[in-house]
Amino acid sequence: MSGRTIIRGGLVITASDEIHADVLIEDGRVAALAASGTPAAGAFTAERVIDATGKYVIPGGVDAHTHMELPFGGTFASDTFETGTRAAAWGGTTTIVDFAVQSVGHTLREGLDTWHAKAEGNCAIDYAFHMIVSDVNDETLKEMDLLVEEGVTSFKQFMAYPGVFYSDDGQILRAMQRSAENGGLIMMHAENGIAIDVLVGQALARGETDPRYHGEVRRALLEAEATHRAIRLAQVAGAPLYVVHVSAMEAVAELARARDEGLPVFGETCPQYLFLSTDNLAEPDFEGAKYVCSTPLRPREHQAKLWQGLRTNDLQVVSTDHCPFCFAGQKELGRGDFSKIPNGLPGVENRMDLLHQAVVDGHLSRRRWIEIACATPARMFGLYPKKGTIAPGADADIVIYDPHAEQVMSARTHHMNVDYSAYEGKRTTGRVETVLSRGVPVITEREYTGRAGHGVFTPRSTCQYLT
Ligand code: URP
Ligand code: ZN
Ligand code: ZN
Ligand code: ZN
Image (cartoon, rainbow, N blue to C red; front, side, top):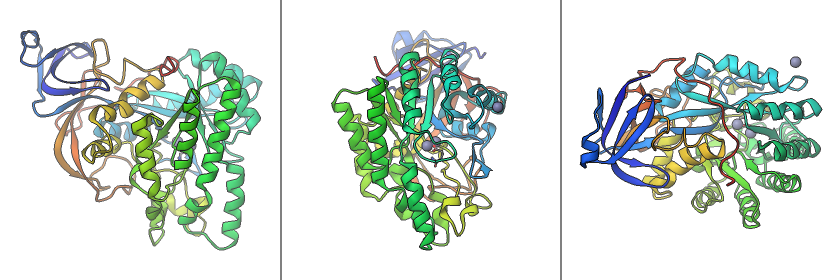
């Protein structure tokens, strides 16, 4: 544990307030805040003082959707917990919630143990797990209760990927009924995978093999239909529902309607859906493969509805769905057959900056930036107020952010273990300067000062967004 640190003179931004304040950190936690220049702030003493004049002082980002080392399509996501959490820190994220995977025929426990083994001792920042449930049966349902008790309180199910992660409506309903009892939160990959597979086969038979057809067959209507079905199944079960990686405006409309009815349904979108589009999927020379993820990128007109949903709180969270595959050797597995391109985009390092750019561009307020990227993901997944805010008692997971620095996103300078950037050449305003994780400097004035193994597994309570 570090001793005491003071962060002086910055603009402290949380989901609820913006104040010029000094922050006193002691034993890895926020001990006190006091308005800068007041006697109370002047009375703070510490071994280390960080001057944040002219900078923002914000809670470390909480990225509630990552896939380090995910096995997918015969290969593995290219970031390990070591490289991926280091890159996250560079981008101002101090907590990730990654997805442990139950493989069909195995138990949840086996999947969770495997993910603990991958992460333990390797992470630069704190981490937690959701559990992907691929095989709902009597045993798995019992195991869900045990996982909730040990701090793995959310479960992802897939209406897509038949034969891999897919659950049918009955399996989904049973898991939802269980979560209604044990307090777990079901996270849904909402796409009608059965119908999509028919369309994939038909497209390939017509010789439509380029990456852009990935976006065409995974129709927005099939995302909306699955979103609607998931909402109604959750309603029948009496369970809350969190829909992951929402990209279609028709799916946002389903969430908005359900919320207007008073149902506890929530939605997450990702930077790729806010900043990229089917134009990227259509890039020539197989470059479009860099942008293959599911749900897919949509035509540009969907973006305005996603920004609107974030402002009206019909969407509550922006996570990355960080799932990187190198262009060379991994994305290339799908040359001549888009259905063999491993699904996923890199982004864990880019999220805080892209969302700050959205503040600069006028899509979001500063406090809403912190709300959707830090506070709400922490509350949604039972990490608040330990994570997601700057308040006495909270972990000192704090970013000193320079709102005026300019940068250009590029694979040449990023720290993710992947050979391309989805945002290559994009100019953004704002940059992470210093990052503390439980008071320990992980990034110090744009130098990496962290270490693998500093980050620890963080058990979570159940969803705190319901009450
Ligand atoms: O394309 C994606 N999203 N890959 C990661 C797996 C998932 O469905 O979240
Ligand atoms: Zn087994
Ligand atoms: Zn998914
Ligand atoms: Zn994902």
